[in-house]
Amino acid sequence: MNESLPPVLFGFFCWWFGTGLVFLLDRLLRGRGAAARALIVGLGAASLLAIAASSGVVEPWGAYLGFGASIALWGALELSFLTGWLTGPRTSACPGGCRGWRHFGHAVMALLHHELALVAGALAVAALCWDRPNPTAAWTYAVLWVLRESAKLNLFLGVRNSAAELLPPRLSHLAAFFGKRRVNALLPVSIAAAAAVDAVLIRAAVSPAATPLLRSAELMLATLLALAIVEHLVLVLPVRADALWTWATKRGQTRTPQTPPRGSLKTGLRTAPAVVPAVVPAVVPTVLAHGAPAKPL
Image (cartoon, rainbow, N blue to C red; front, side, top):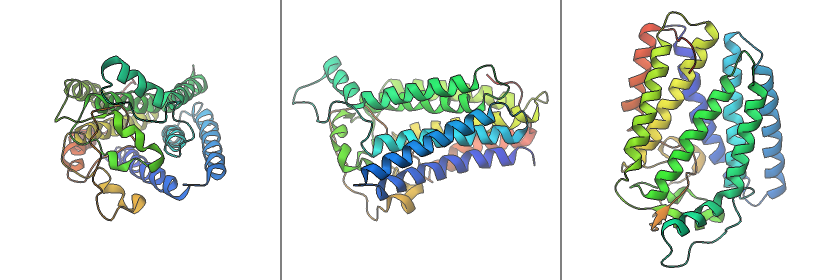
């Protein structure tokens, strides 16, 4: 149990503090384009250097370094989007009556530059971790990327709680691509698939055959994936999306969200305290009761 708790807590902390820091920096850097870009480039470069260093470390601290560096790189990419630096060539909402594949194409163009940046980030992390003994950073980036794309598709198809009020003013046109319905057909599939993968991670985490490196890596990945499932659940629950980060968003009162026809984007890792205790304990007690992960997926 003592060996299992630190990776779980570290995974949760990176998710919570990293998300809040992105919200805070976006708020502080508004109107400071040059400073924002310098910070993003510096953070991204430092993260890649840390990922390269972690990939050759087979001790448990190498898993922590790789996981944290990948979260930091993802945060830099999120800032590049929220600050309006890397978004897409489309900067306006669709005209009335736009729907179907044409509407989807407009949504893609509104995000195209950022999506290409995510691909570039994935290629860079994969190259740094290729054929190296510690691929924790690559697996972390993969979890973030796949679940984020899932969230974007679900927002486009329509959910109850799009949290469009969290969009910064410069990106307010993106709310036109958020769908509005109680639930869509893709969301249960997304949650079920993520839960199945998380179950595999948890099963690996309780195997006695793990090395200390894999133990730490699997526990952090299982925690991150469980939190990503929570984010998907929040999309259909009547909760405040930034409830854990009011210290960063400074929203004293909840603004009335926009309710556009359809959607395609997620602005940040989100959840609410009313939901977290219901999901995270599904992973944590099982892992802590055994305490050792096995081989990575």
